[in-house]
Image (cartoon, rainbow, N blue to C red):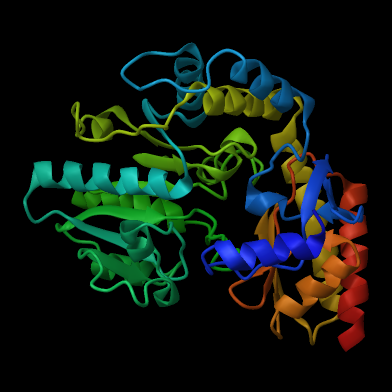
Length: 397
């Protein structure tokens, strides 16, 4: 199909919820993708931190193809080997005790919220409040968009579920002021993603842990964007030495195959009994086989170490660019291959111009250029992207 045919059919039939770029992608290889006109782009968005192995990774492709020929789906009324292998692997990597497999990040966070509420209600009828951070993002379901500390995502969906409270990220005093005996959970992204790539101050996550211990609340870390080795350790919270009660994962977990998970300590998971939660498609053999292949590749190919090293290189390059364009770049933030450059102007036009020059990045929070490439990205590829961003920003210097 021609590009315009695809665009017109989308406009005619797809619900108008996406502001899409005028780009029709056809295939990818490694850190590169190609459009239907044959143009090549370096992909430093990676499906928004999803394609952690890039495109067409042989191990992932093989795992999906082999599993598709065996068993794609069966009910969770039965056991499958890929599912039990995956939950064992996730428990070992995370330090958690129990795992539930879902289909998306929103489902994972929804399940985490349910588990925390159930745990709280078992302690006291009044223990139901969940504290989240402003500028957070936790999903698009009614409960998870309520947990999301950004009013723009909530407008038009009122009345929202009750029991959620919001505090500024990295503000310990504000957190202390709202956590109480009514709090069943504090829910935090260890590194904020959609809010503009905000990294915690040194003791913020530890302080949240201490408050939760003081009031008998669950600490939930939303690692949907920051997990899977992206920050240099399997979980971002591991890099800060803080263990939560519940962790959520999705995005890169299966390298592009839809999957999500929430993991919990034995104590937290004990709040659930048969019938309290479930999923038709969650934990299907195809997605679990894909996730196992991704986890194997991350370990065998040293991708966590690569994310730390190449991410540090990218941050350094963007900081140098900030010095070159101080009137355009306000701040560079990030950890590993989760990097943001806050601009003093809207970022959409910068993204458009970079795309014209063959680099795919995106803008979040209105003016933050976000770089979340595959975990096997190289320094040479960083140089390629940085050169394009440099050329684009030079137009306004």
